[in-house]
Image 1 (cartoon, helix red, strand yellow):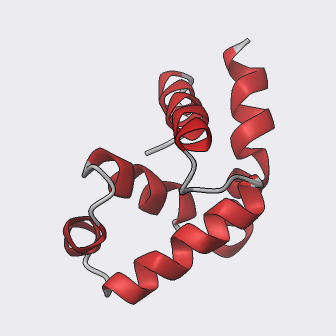
Image 2 (image 1 turned 90 degrees about the vertical axis):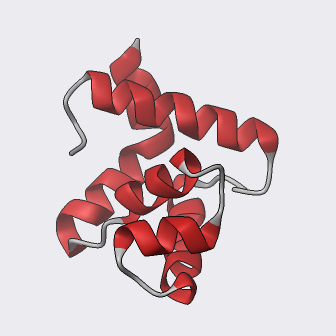
Image 3 (image 1 turned 120 degrees about the horizontal axis):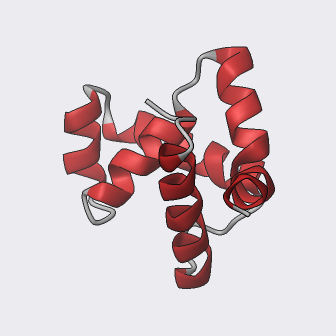
Amino acid sequence: MLTALVEHVLGEVLRYDEAHDSQLLVSARTWMERDRRTDAAAAALHIHPNTLTYRLRRFGALADRDMASTRALAEVWLAIQAAGALGLTD
């Protein structure tokens, strides 16, 4: 069940990250862990806020999720937690 959730929500992102070493999943997770505060997440990632904004847009496009939607955020958050429980994330 967890594997299916991760594949459904994050599959494309995980494959893209692996192929391009893009850190999209880490960026989205860090942003969400900091209550969607872009400046705080960018500082934690040691990147410019504009870079984080680009990564979040790319993440949303690959995951086919509108990251401004509460429903999408909840689904992504659950999938990220599931990926962590399965040992699929750093």
